[in-house]
Length: 131
Image (cartoon, rainbow, N blue to C red; front, side, top):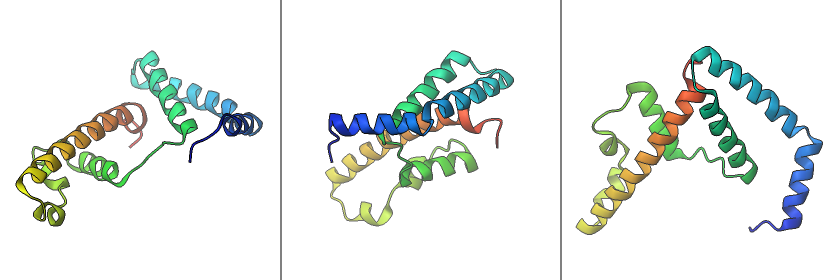
């Protein structure tokens, strides 16, 4: 469903009423202090935090199943050489033609690289030092 300007304005008003921005400011201060303690570049952390807030406002804060699988794999075993093989849906893969298999692997590889990049950002700013 496409959100209209009126709906967006109403959502913004609700965020203000419920103290969303004050909560964001408090979280940012907390993250800033954590970044200082961990020796993380504060401006880099602020850009990450800003993107996270924008994502939350847009409503596309997706914790999809594929990302969660990648995250679990990386937390348990780190980056492994056979990650794509482990993430492949073997039953589905068996039903594909040769060209479909090639396309599937390219798409899976691209998805994995994006998930890996997302994990590295989240790890640096949210997971590291808190696990």
